[in-house]
Length: 197
Image (tube, rainbow, N blue to C red; front, side, top):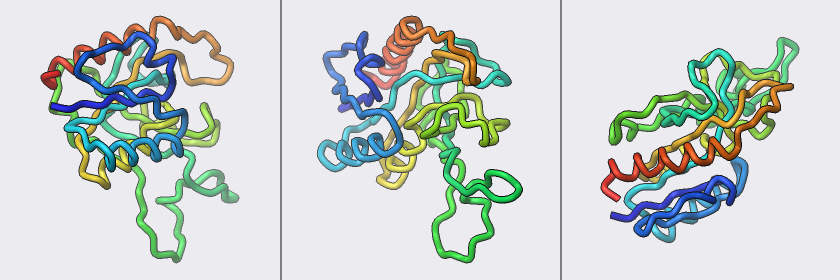
């Protein structure tokens, strides 16, 4: 079985080693992740593609810094327009245009593993953007929606694992980078063991 793990940064990948798993640094953000995910699928088409990284948690979510979560859904949160009523997601705008309206993307493979807390993610190019609705999500990152979209379009089996590094709230600057990278690495080994790696 071939498995590839994408990490947005070398920092997030720094503690991970596995003799039977390929690792790739995708780069930070939606654009870099879409490119690297597409390239990996086209060139290697592994049996599983996993995105692993850190994430911020929203204060209302029931997760704590240092916890690890499997991401069940992703939303490209800052895709939209500012209107007189405020920010409106592109999927909810009454535009007279013919285009695919996508809002929340779901991972159909989360049942392939067990024992992980499930989280709802939102991907943002602007971290902690004050204009988006975070009431229906738990964590934020900068890559997940692009990863979900490409994998779904290409019929690729995929999972996303995130370790909570900080509270996603302006002024909350107490990040546990070392602890979250360790938690991510430990969680990733548990996940890979369940996949048979």
